[in-house]
Amino acid sequence: KIMSKKIIAGNWKQNGTLKSSISLAKKVLQAVKKAKYTHEIIIIPPSIFLLPIRDLIHKSQIKLGAQNVSAFSDGAYTGEISGSMLKDSGVDYCLVGHSERRHIINEDESVFSSKVSRLIDSDIRVIYCFGETLNDYKNKKTKLIIKSQLKKLFLNNKNNLKKHPSKLILAYEPVWAIGTGLVPSPEELVSIFKYIRDTVNKLDKKYSPIKILYGGSVTPDNASSLMDTKHLDGLLIGGASLVAKKFIDICSTI
Ligand code: 13P
Image (cartoon, rainbow, N blue to C red; front, side):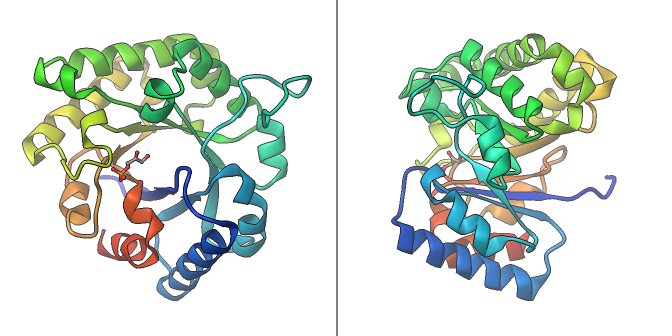
């Protein structure tokens, strides 16, 4: 395997207070300063806490991610935050396509592709989440669903992604593994990650540097064995990223 930076990203979702978020960021910062990890560490707080956390982690090894972005460029879109505002606020990464936005907020592929465009225009890296539901999984439709989600992403953003393939990171998050304590078996993961890599490479050779993360019930106990999966470049962590010790343990164990 070519030595490339592993990615550990913590998606805090809609959790915490200003005080608890700053305290969590401080603890992660201290650990990162001490350990000097070689991987890319990303924390993804609620948007309203981005700026104070930016000030804390500024000039450190930790990168800042946003959970959401407007599908529109600056203008009359009440309540939205644009890609250029995120960039201006020190954001390096942004999630798009997360299962909670697909299934609870009801966003669809056309919204996601606008968001991907806005982010690439604003020079922010996209962490694009995708994955099958429990029903798809039970009906053995995992690969079919993954293929269709990836095809839509790459087709809708062809020009941008061909020009800037390194601006995209994929995050495979089976919906049934999010917050449930369930994770796919090692065999399933090997087969799925090979499939994702092959599907991406088949679309265009230029896409081969795109990194692929796994997300869904990652803990300090399973992180290192998950990372043994071929073609897997890092982890996207929800619940465990809210507990400083767990997040730091994951960073240390992989
Ligand atoms: P959990 O780690 O809590 O399962 O969440 C995963 C996730 O949705 C990260 O984006």
